[in-house]
Length: 282
Length: 300
Image 1: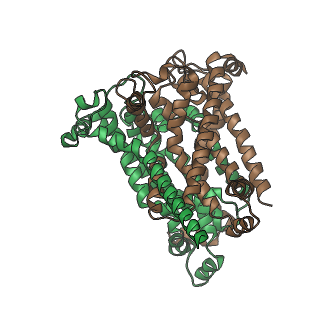
Image 2: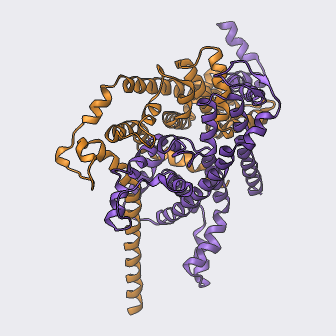
Image 3: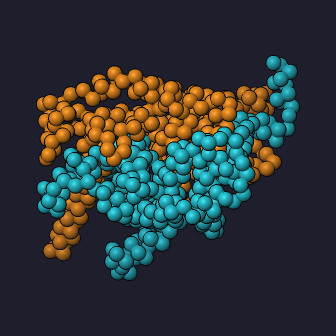
């Protein structure tokens, strides 16, 4: 009797520690983010006070209004949306074709191509961006949508093919055979059989390439100068050891983080399975 | 159109596959293979854009110059220190969080969702968040430390030794990437058969013993992959440096990747930067080989 009650007590203590630990994790993860969110809504004289002062009653959108009245911010936001949507869309298309080819067809020297794809993913972006900067300058593609989209695609398509290869490979070959026997053309088989079955994978590629592209700083920093500069570059201009526009920095941080954070929360399941797939042996 | 589609139907499986691959192949050929070869040539050339746009062949001079450059050499150990501290922080805390989440409890999904947020935000935003926390005039870290009586008055945290400055950057970076490590470890933990633990319990093994004798060996494969992914990420640290310190004050936090960027796009010394980029790539290739070997060794 006393033995079972001590076991129950121990279980209760364990539960308490579990919830305390979980609460600590959530606090540690969310508090820096929350603090910047609060900062972005503050009045400027509250930001510059020792010790820090917060008044919920005085929350206002002043810093956000300031951002939207800045032409550089508006153009950076527009460029980010245009470039990343174009790049992600093309990446999904090109990777779907490529993933279908390497996942479902017998192609000579396929392993060489797969090795090249893996090599691109391992190459540090900077090592590619230095020569790309020279090449794009030669053809007048620096600071253009075309140049940006091409460079983003260079990094996104290999990842996309790598993800989709598995999805296409898991479709049973008999499905393709029977569709061909039923008189479906090669392209028809691709569009009517393969593409719908690999849809979760293609959606995953879209999410991954969008998040990675939207968050990237180095590519727009190298490939664009002014007219086609992107949001991360604009946000980074609030960085450095001596910049003191605290409220502006907080507001631009929140706005830059919004699209990808929303996406991550909405597509939680796909992201977690995609992210962690590499960690499990098998 | 009809002729075209009949051609598609008649070609061999190999040729149709190659046709499907051609956009990706073209992209890799023109925008990866050619630039890599071109930059090898650039790394053997004297090319400073502010002086002349014409490269001049100088052999291995850029490599020799880079390997004698005190800022570059100092950047190597700074990158090393950054990588090790970042790796330790993300692995230890990632493991603790993963062990916690390996239990079932109410609200677990909320914790997992909140873990995705640091992962999803741009690294630039991570930099801005911590720049504000660390701020020397009005930062909340100063306020907390003063309140706790640890420091007497507000201070500028990046003014100290390079080690402490890099440690601060490392903590900020770990905040963003620890959740990824936790989710990876959690996924791996869930594949360990429960019977192993039950058998160990019957044999009287304590919790710590079970952790080191069962959990760690079972996680070996996943941990090695996480180490390598995190190490390559640490070697390529750029965004957070660009936002927090820009390598400063002075050259205190000048890590290798950021320095190579500066050489290329601030000093416009494309030849020297190409040599530096090749040296960084070499380090990453070494890790990639270890990765490959581990994968190969892990599948039997």
